[in-house]
Image (cartoon, rainbow, N blue to C red; front, side, top):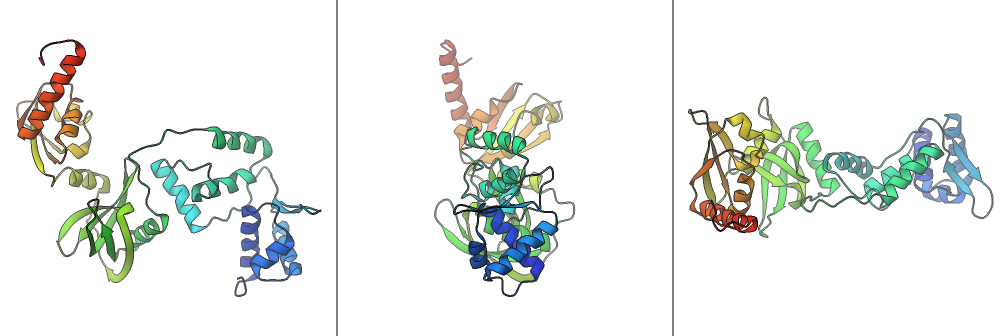
Length: 322
């Protein structure tokens, strides 16, 4: 396993093994490293000489573990653990108490390296906290996400194997502009070459990524979040236009950008132009507006708004929708 590694690399691998399996024996270390027990003990000595508090206990249940101190020792994370921690920060990952999950495994290493009083508090929070699950969140496979992030950073074209929500499958070449996290979902914002068009793909639906030799230059001054929000608001089944008796700035604070584009109407009000595949959902979003408004395009949305108004009026005890 470690035959081609330098002594320093073997020592770091030894540290990772000790961190991942507290109480691991010299015999087990030697087996994992592919060296003799004597060599495994020498790597432990190298770590101790570097100031890393490796403790050992004798007996049938003894072994090596990283001791606790005022300073964290070097922590060696796998690529899945490192990316998992980053993704956890970005999308609110909630598998921190599961040691088989990359985030849970990485957090376990940190907790084991903390001083005892601090570790006890951290471990108590980790094991007893019960976060409410985000039903809209869909977390992609870390390896696929890492491949796409690398392609974005290197400005390298990729070939995607994709499966849509409806079950359609296709392969396409794209220029990956950015990876965007929005409401617990991960999107690849890209330029699809065959269509010569902007596209946004859910990364959890990407089945495979092939890095191609071609490079590209993303648009200058690209705002990935704004572009994604605007893209998600267009191209759906029902076109929508709403006239609102309020200024753009006031309305923008109430509505998600994914509803469409807000434009000044010239009379102190504004106009919302967008599209939707779900008029019921769109009508519910419009109730956030705290000013008079009129739906001037989309009969389906008008019907849903009328039905919603009647339901609210009934719930309030009124016999009319008002």
